[in-house]
Amino acid sequence: QVQLQQWGAGLLKPSETLSLTCAVHGGSFSGYYWTWIRQSPGKGLEWIGEINHSGSTNYNPSVKSRVTISIDTANYQFSLKMTSVTAADTAVYFCARVHLYYNYGYEYWGQGTLVTVSS
Amino acid sequence: DIVLTQSPPSLPVTPGEPASISCRSSQSLLHTNGHNYLEWYLQKPGQSPHLLIYLGSNRASGVPDRFSGSGSGTDFTLRITTVEAEDIGIYYCMQALQTPFTFGPGTRVDFK
Image 1 (cartoon, rainbow over the protein chains, first blue to last red):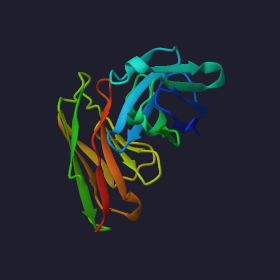
Image 2: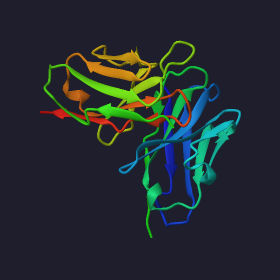
Image 3: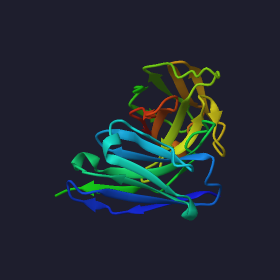
Image 4: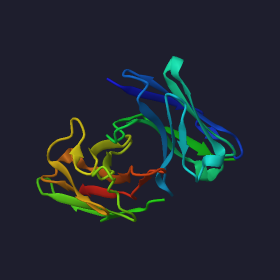
């Protein structure tokens, strides 16, 4: 059974860097896109970006200049870093998995991490 | 970006009765391979979204057969044949045709 467990700092000040990590338990690490999605009251669900096991990434242009998604295949983890956060980045952040070649949907999700940006 | 709209925004339901939700896309979600890249998710309070339907009409593993997805191109529908108590929550459609993938604003389903 696949489980995604995520963690990271939940309270940030404006201009700081958001850093979240998602650990993958069970299943293969290759053959999938590992994704970050966030949910805020104002903007709903927003796809942030994805990475595959080779390190190939795709980002949402709305955050691309501030976001880096990286992968640690040795430890079955992938991470999200977002620089220069503002109150608009306050959201629940989810990690999720989708098949690399077949659009079978996001079948597995992390539990979500609430990140609040406030001075 | 592809924009998805959902209707209704809120849907009061009665247990045992049918329900349906509409999702409309600003662009066709029909891929050249013949599949529609439209997914449906249910998010219950305090939980992560849960996949119900992928490629427009395919039920995800473990999803009860009272859920069905239909439609093609720009117009899609999620149907529940008989609503059960566990079906309460917010339903989202999502397009997976092109990045950035985008979600609809959601339809809140609750009991009357």
